[in-house]
Image 1 (cartoon, rainbow, N blue to C red):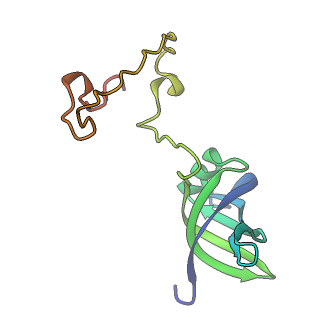
Image 2 (spheres, rainbow, N blue to C red; image 1 turned 180 degrees about the vertical axis):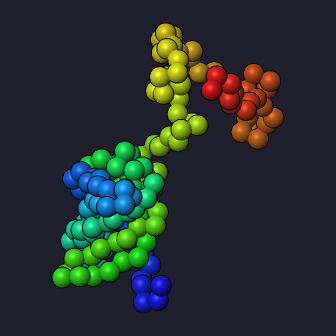
Image 3 (cartoon, one colour; image 1 turned 180 degrees about the horizontal axis):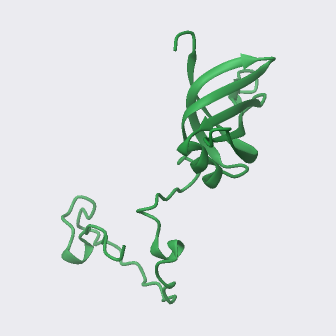
Length: 159
């Protein structure tokens, strides 16, 4: 559509995500994202937080269900979509929403550890082995890995 302004907004979810369904049964989610810009004060020569900017985000379809299930209060997210200003309030009709990996660790269905997914019992705690320092005369960072250090492909069995 013409006349729309695309934007990328980084911020924290404020409050709870509201999930509703339209008359046709399409899921729709709405949440408030608060962006706090960083500003540089030349007189003090330091950075400080600027005035918080609330943005009301809406998403529809399968994305709405995912947003409602994954996002909670204070989670850092990055949202993209079309932005509009109405009655001095910013609205973002989101096309994409994701967890900001600069602040959180995220797992997708295939990479969720088996213990967290409920597919395997928790392993028994074991004593940590003492780290072995590299020999001082070798360049251990550039050296070829030993067979015990080789990186292997993760197992996809058990699904």
